Length: 294
Picture 1 (cartoon, rainbow, N blue to C red):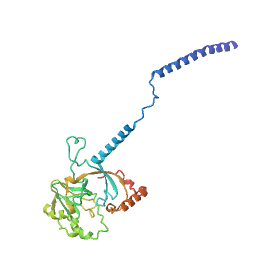
Picture 2: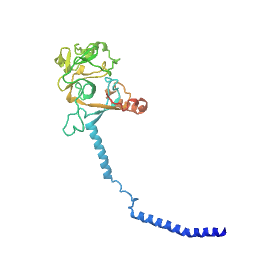
Picture 3: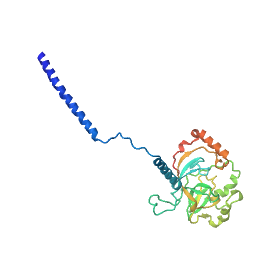
Picture 4: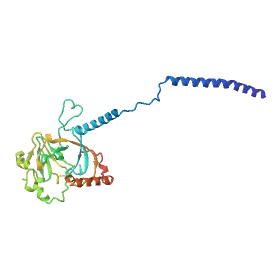
């Protein structure tokens, strides 16, 4: 038994130097491998101030290009498009959708003329510099009339599930305005209908029988909330050149007073800004965020 234990110890003593030599060789190999690799721990050169400013300028130029030529932010000021668009909805408008076609960009950015049912943002024909949003009802050549508040186009009754009839409680002439509003253009307008002067003078020249005929390069538009909408019935056709773009989606919606867009005083504007900051979370209509406009 003792002889066997001695033999095992002798074998163990012989193996220890061999194991040590093997580990030493492995260590040497790893060191040689590390020496051959490029130094990965070298510090990368820091970005210079000029390079940083150039990066910022690139971002600003890109953003400015998009805002100027492709997208435009727009706030809904009135209830004429309820419930499709509410007062206080903030939308992004695609300016390129209805832009004039070009040979170079047309394959990348397809252009369209306004079509039936399109919601468009345009410059008001009645008030200089005012942006308005309505729905296209008639395109060039269409024959339009209303009978008992129902729209007929080229002799066919329109199916308009988006239409609302929400009267303005402050409109003291609501009932007196109904005949012209609901039976256009058969009923002759009166002074309380508040037609634009140019439209009142030229309206009859566009009537054929009981229909209003839309001329070339023009569009007839109405708001979805028909009882309060100040639209083509009152100021006439939208010239093609006045069309700005098509609302894409609502990026933010905030509960806003109906007359807020009329507030011009700096104090009123600052007051509403403070109100917005204080009530940002509880008066934002979160469910309308990123809603597609259609």
